[in-house]
Length: 213
Ligand code: DX5
Ligand code: ZN
Image 1 (tube, rainbow, N blue to C red):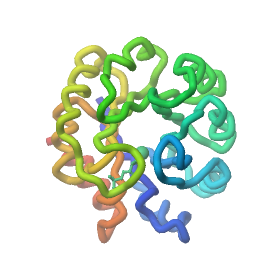
Image 2: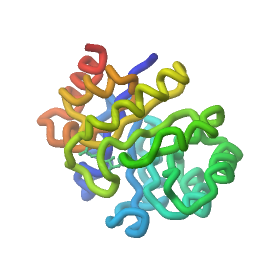
Image 3: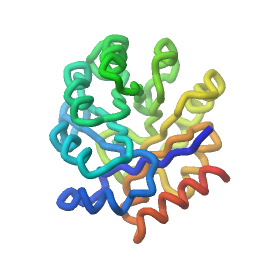
C-alpha cells in the first residue's frame, strides 16, 4: 500500500499561498480544509481560492469539506480543480446522492467520520469510495492533539478492505504517524507539523519514512 503525505494548508501563511505550496512540493497530495462556520465553528476558504491555487500547483488536491451541505457545493469544488472531494457522513446531505454527484463530475469521492461516529456507518458506501478519512481530532481547528482511541476504527476498515486509501487527519507528527500507520492508515494529513518545521519538505520526507517504521 502506497503511503501518501497530504499537508494541510490550514497551517500555512494565507498571505503567501503560492510560495507556501512551493515549500511543500515534495507532497503527494495537498489537503485543503473548507469550513463553513456551520458544520464546524470556523470559516476558512472556498472554491474561488481552490481555483486560484490550481493554476499554480500540479499536485492533486485533496479537498476536505467540513460543510453542512456538500451536495450543493460538490460541483463548485469539482470545477475549481478538486481531485478528491471528501465530505462528512455527519453532514446534512444524502450520502449516496453526494457520492454519486462527485463521481458523475469525474472526481474521486471520499467520506470522512468524526471521532465519535461509528465506522460501520461508512461500510454501505465503501465500494464507491476511493478513500475514507478517519478524523483523529474533532474537526474545526488545526493544532489539536491526536486521538489514539480512534485507531480501532482504522483497523476495522483495513481488515475489511486492503486496497482503499485510509486517511488520518489531526495531530499527525513524527511520532503519531507511526501509530496511525501501524493501525492501517496510508494517507497522512499534517498541518502544524509540516508548516512549523524549518524545512517543510524535509518534514514530509520524515513523516513518509516514519510511516514505514
Ligand atoms: C481539522 C482539519 C485538519 C487540520 C490538521 O479540522 O481537518 O486538516 O488542518 O491540522 P494539524 O495537523 O495541525 O492537526
Ligand atoms: Zn482536514
